[in-house]
Amino acid sequence: MSRGTIIFISILVLAIGGFIFISQSSLLSGLSLNFLDGQKDKAIRGDLVIPVTSTGVVESAQIIQVKSKAGGIVNQIPVLEGQMVKKGDILVVLDPVDEKRAVEARQSDADRAKSAWEKAKIALEKAKIDLPNQTLTAEARLADAKARLSTAKYQYDKLMKLAKEQPDGGVYSEQEVITVTANRDSAKAAVDMAEIDVITSKNNEIVLLKSAEEDVVQAQATWETTVKNLEDANQRLAETTVRAPADAMVYSIQTRVGEAIQSGTQSLTGGTPLLILADVSAMFVIAQIDEADIGEIREIAPDYARPGKTQRLEESEYIRKAREIIEKSKASSQPLSNDEKAMILSEAEKQAIEKEGVEVQARPVVVTVDAYRTETYKGVIERILPAPERLTNAVTFKVRIRLIGEDLQKLNGLQADLEFETETKHNVVLVKNEALTSEVLQCYVFVPHRDNPGDRLGEKKIPVKIGATDGTHTEVVAGLKEGEEVWTKRPQLTDKEKRESGG
Image (cartoon, rainbow, N blue to C red; front, side, top):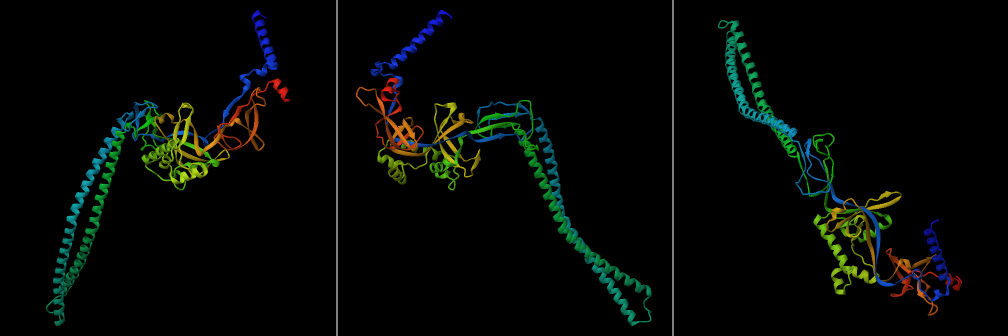
């Protein structure tokens, strides 16, 4: 063993022996040792804020998945993750060669369809002229046939009359009878056929004209479809330069330069995601609240956020109301005169405070995150989802809190700790929780006490009746007055003091 080690051990033994000697020595009766003296605090009068705590994740107002209607090879990605972009800023540039070819093909289709439509309109105009003329021609042929039939009938009737007057047939021959009969029958048949032609012409005037009109409608529809296809092709060509659809943060880049991407409208798979944007114009925390606490959370939520009374407001109105609640909370937490309180609190709220000491109004939520421990953020409940969720045998409800403040986008995706001020008790006696000791159903505090003037300060056990707690302070309903001292860390007795007290 080295000489240095022997010296160190000797010093350590002497120090321990000296401490034992001093602790048992009569000199300790007049000596105050800090590590034995304990720590004191005073009962104070103030307001007790009773919180409900929870955790949640900070989310942006909206997550936007960006795809392109165009397909092709990625040429440029001029943005980075975390970068703020404005609506219309360029996010991705694609090689436009394929989409240019598609535009040219759709333009040709549109030109052919336009030509077919023009031809159909010309055919319709021609039908409007020709079909009535065909009917007129048929009617003229019918009139001619009827005239021929009239002549043939006259000749037939004349011959038949002569046949009756001269039965011996001296003035006509059998061939003449056959001829005039045939002429009459032929003329009658010609009239029948002409009548059919007239009916057919009139029907055609209706049917063929309608068909020609439908041809025009169909040709126009085909042309309009090709024009729409051309517009889509032009839009896809334009979207070979992909732009931001809104002011947002680039949350994630899903592609890289040189990669072939599929169109979001032409692909059966829905297209290739290019980027994920986060709309950080508004930030929210989505908290899971236990069913045991959801009643109190509903009580402190604004009317427009409570299930059964939920209202959809404009974005600006949500922000305005949230800021009003936060400002009202700041004002009501300050010492105010009765006149000032009257300007801030409603009559019902003032009566509740006066009668019960409990403040009932919409309250903000205190939000903290580990990444920025020195900063505190405020939010306001905006929505309480009525549908419960079961998580590991516990029933919870989702609560959406809108954050109000500056530079909130840095919180996106972070785990947040939430504190809901569910109740405020005014003007009550408070002690630190470290001062309280419980035995079965009774609660006690230890107050500084000396049996004799020269004794070291000791303690006296006092029973108290307690009320609510915020986790740091507890309300004392009875047994302790404002300003009285209590031990938050009880003093320790030396071995000699223990022997003298019989402990």
